[in-house]
Length: 410
Image (cartoon, rainbow, N blue to C red; front, side, top):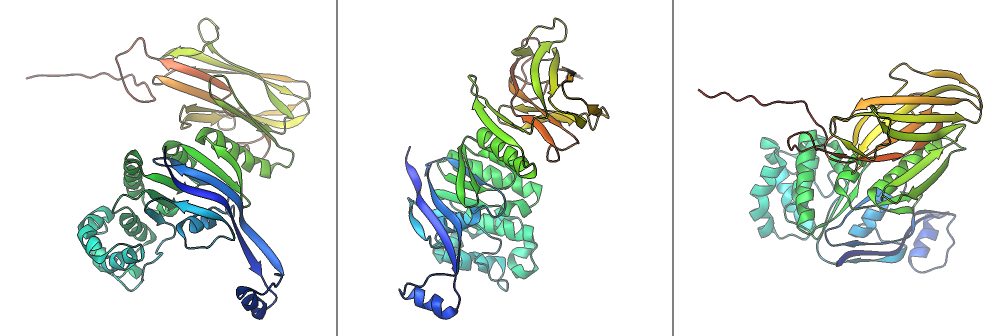
């Protein structure tokens, strides 16, 4: 598959000098040592293939936006080389290239020109841009009266007026309403199917799992992890918990079935055994039937005394979307004063009202309704099982419904 974007050894350093004179001297070639340096990015390398959707994730200050500005050419790198094949369209900041006193229509001509599009081309695309933005009469009013969501609509409509080889979107869609977010992601998926490469920066990890083929985790300006959405997103969640708990340990291992198990915690109490069995026969279940009665059995083994224990369970599908989740905090089954050496046995009984596919259970042991307080153990994809439909008419989706259709003719 052809590479449309190559990032090789990119780094960006922001230097501080003792005076403007020293800064000017440095610009003209004099060797003046800065008083301090901050590297927003350091030694970043990757390639993006045609039609590939890549997400850049990380906490605020990780260097994501700086890297995107380097890729789009609005910031010059200190080190490294960027190679781009084809047209790049980017939505980096609300109102970037817009004039607050111009109308939406005038800004399309102005900002579109800055993007390298001719006035004739923009005029021909204007009706489609106006229709997609759906801002009504505001299209011919100054954008200083626009809400942030309306600016996002205008910016996205312009950036996607024609299909680019590379589309870069940096968080800007998060300010729009749910209807326009859905509409925008439909267009992004359509572009991807046509061969456009996508680079997405977002804190919405559900969007990452749904859209992207690959994820790069940035931390303090460097690449911490590069891999599948499932692997990197789970690692990122564990990393965030790690920063809240100084003694937390994080480990990942890919199972023979292809699922990645991410385990993190301080392990004062940990999962000793977790199995899925039939509620009727107590036999182990690897493949469940739609509407079958099941039990998830879990043993928690304490190595130290802990004051309070909460069990959480989360059920996800193969794409990582959460199907269901709850914990014993919400069910008011909190255990207190657990002694070292004690074993707690949990039995979670449920009916498999799931659609055909692969699913996984993630258990967590903590002291409250969030694992960010005391994460004793969090284990992604601890139990993996398949669901098949052998007893009911064909249906689509991740949930089976006890539904009937009645038909009357007169």
